[in-house]
Image (cartoon, rainbow, N blue to C red; front, top):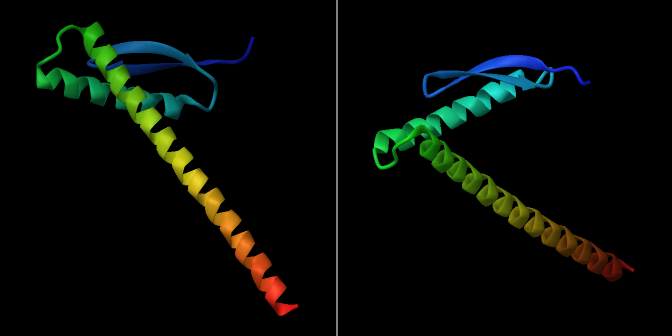
Length: 99
């Protein structure tokens, strides 16, 4: 079995013991802080009640941010690829002109 470390994280003033791979503790803590912030914002708005509903809304918000970021990254990658192709075309044209 792989080595795991046990980390305590606090979300909405409740402590959770979570296992994670060695060296990933800070990433887990950062994830817990993000979730805690999202859940606190939802709770403060006062429109969603119950820990489970707040958690689901926070998860949906975080998932939406992730998907939006991935779409943006794919669009940027596509633009970079098109730009690289155009640069290659211009270089090829320039080489033809010099010969």
